[in-house]
Image 1 (cartoon, rainbow over the protein chains, first blue to last red):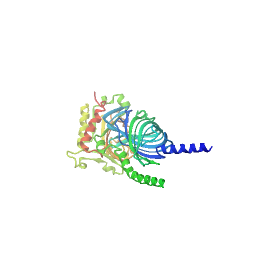
Image 2 (image 1 turned 60 degrees about the vertical axis):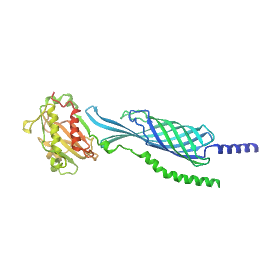
Image 3 (image 1 turned 45 degrees about the horizontal axis):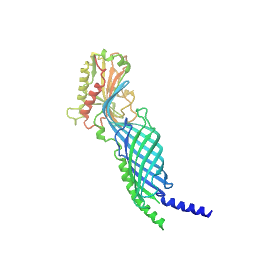
Image 4 (image 1 turned 45 degrees about the vertical axis):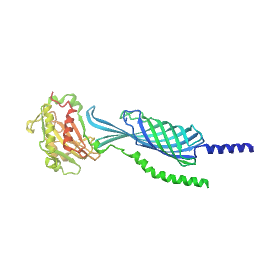
Length: 200
Length: 225
């Protein structure tokens, strides 16, 4: 019994030393390239993500993340006809996305300062579709589900150091759609670069 | 001791991190809306027509119209109804005036579609009414404003003007009102054009005139032929 306890204690110590850290906060600058381009097609660098990760052991972690990004596009001036009339204007399509996701992470390396990982995020997305034309605007809000598989890496500057870098690429798919504007599910590729604050 | 050191290092780094948060948020928050200069490039032109009238090809039955020569209507909440109109005297800063060029271009478009301007005594087939709505919304329902009838009336009829539920903009409204087939007290607006915003444009006169032309371009059914 004593031997089992000692072995367990040693294993725990080994695990504790090998895993990346106890937890970490990150803030990432996010670039999004839409792959569904009917409403917005321009790549946007106006995004930010804040998250917290609990490193469960040397290979698995879990976390939560909140994000925001804005995408836009310009539709040149044209005439739209409808029963009973027509309207001529240019339009600025804007899409504001707010996400809150939970995630699971798998680390490909069990030790070292450089830790590549794969993650799967799932959660809710709140989208605000806004059309700006001249001094006028109209908005429709939709809430849906979002999933984001992600591949990335963390680099910790020093063993037990608090500061690190994080970079990732991911693919995002959201169930949000707008029937009134004829907009289908949003999807896009994203690149994130940011800093991580490790808590030993 | 080691834990305390790590905690202190974490705390110090966290402070630096927190200082960087506003910059990151600023980065993420920049250009969240289009630039006002881009938005005001051209005016919005919306036209609406009475579907039964257009289906019946009502314009082919018209020959003549009436329009005020030197004034356009002006509606703003709280304005004295006796002052509810504008002349070029209200636009002294615009070379060549604003009101007369608007009226002239409207007449020109109607003439090009085969209609002749006449006076009230000649019993026109339709009347054309031009109004600027100040602090009024763009998309609204049409209501009657009898209090403004002192200016807006022809034949004892009070033109409908746009009612507001949301004040912010200045729009020009051009209406074509059926006179020929009207019964007393029942004058129907068969076409209207909304042009705006007049506040945010950088070239009020040029952009308004372009918008008036566009209103007719997107309304090919306004034609004698």
